[in-house]
Amino acid sequence: MKLFIPGPIWCREEVLREFCHQPMAHRGKQFTELYTGVLQKLKKILGTKGDVHFSTSSGSGVWELAIRNCVRKRALVCACGEFSSKWGDVCEMNGRETVRISVPLGKAIRGPMIADALKKHDVDAVLYCHNETSTGVTNPIEEAAEVMRDHPGVMFLVDAVSGMAGIPIDVDKLGVDLCLASVQKAFGLPPGGAIFTASERAYARAAEIPHRGYYFDLLAIRKSADKGQTLVTPSEPHIYALNFQLDAMLAEGIENRFARHRQMADVVRAWARKNFALFAEPGFESNTVTCIANTRNADIGALNKELQKRHDCIISDGYGELKGKTFRIAHMGDMQISDMHELLRWIDEIVGIAN
Image 1 (cartoon, rainbow, N blue to C red):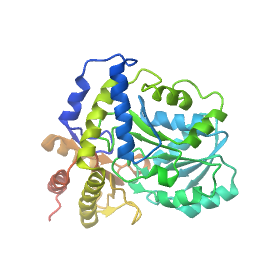
Image 2 (cartoon, rainbow, N blue to C red):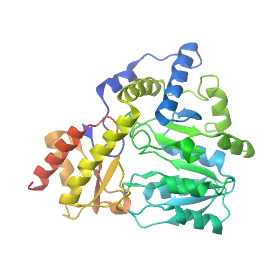
Image 3 (cartoon, rainbow, N blue to C red):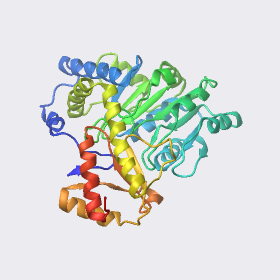
Image 4 (cartoon, helix red, strand yellow):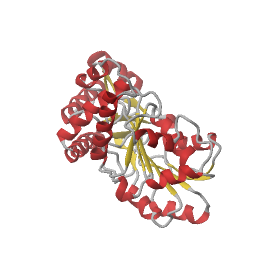
């Protein structure tokens, strides 16, 4: 089945075949060479001189890593949808306090909101979602970064789960202390792995915090990475496939990849404006997932049944309280512009949209 949902997404057969290698000794030379190469390629893809790590977990696991290592007592949660809000919930589950700023669904978190909150509240970290998967909003991270420069004692922690590798994010220039993503989104791999960057400030903060746990101890992870290894037994199939996919991404060219994602988004957005309406605030629409207001009151469940029956594909209903009110179409990873045109034509036929 071809998934046009915002994760997991459709994967190329060539990528899936990379999961079929025989296991290797993950403390041996062969693994060290492979893993070291993967980390170097990730630095090129992400345009960072800092450390990049792979975690055999979902992105939600790295949520906990960021909290346990980089939040001493209290974090500012920038809530603009289901996932950015949930990160705040995870923060509280890990024994930290939260202060929350929020906007109506479909709106973006703006820099002045963060600046105002940091003036009013004593926090030691900001939990910021770059691309909110539930609403199709890309928050203006440059605005947030400008504010954060005035607060050097506050960690800048960024969830880029559905944006990284599809939308530009310059972690070094922006001063991001930890930026995380899942591999089943724009990286175009099956779920089960996550990628994150870590700054020197993040390591320094982790050194100040006791009881970081074992699996997600940032300092232990760094120590292992310096030896070309992972702290715990990794998903070797994911690392094989990631290595293969990174080579393909570098061959395409990261700027070309970003442009392709933007062009796919333009196709879907133009169709949505003509036949429905965009849910995201104008100017902040995501280039990896479009959230569409269901102005025709289409039965998304019935639409998906027909898409699956006729074309072996599905799109995504709205998430949480937006279920039925919106629907989402992903355009990320190895999808092409032709895929978008084909899908939209199929939806037109099923819903009865005349063009």
